[in-house]
Image (cartoon, rainbow, N blue to C red):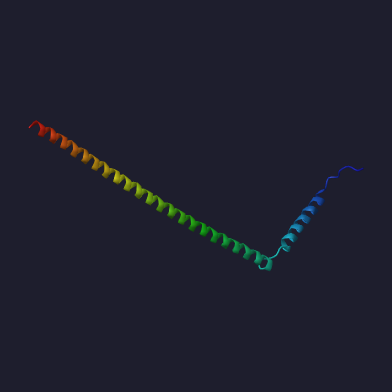
Length: 115
């Protein structure tokens, strides 16, 4: 058994050159931008992006519609509450007027009794 032999400078230089050559060959073997497969893949990605944008626009439209409906319901509820408050105020004013009329009638009856 022989021991481990460290690679020398020329071995390391050859390995680096081989690695660069392999990397260059790998880069050269890739298809160009006008290759039909690349063009088809790009078109597919663009179609997918367009579909996503369309779906997003539909979601935004749906959100806007939901918000509009919620605001409409809130406005109706606010109007109902205001109307009920107004009716309560009117009823309270009417009850107060009734009480005052009754009190005035009692006072007048007492005055009439004294005379």
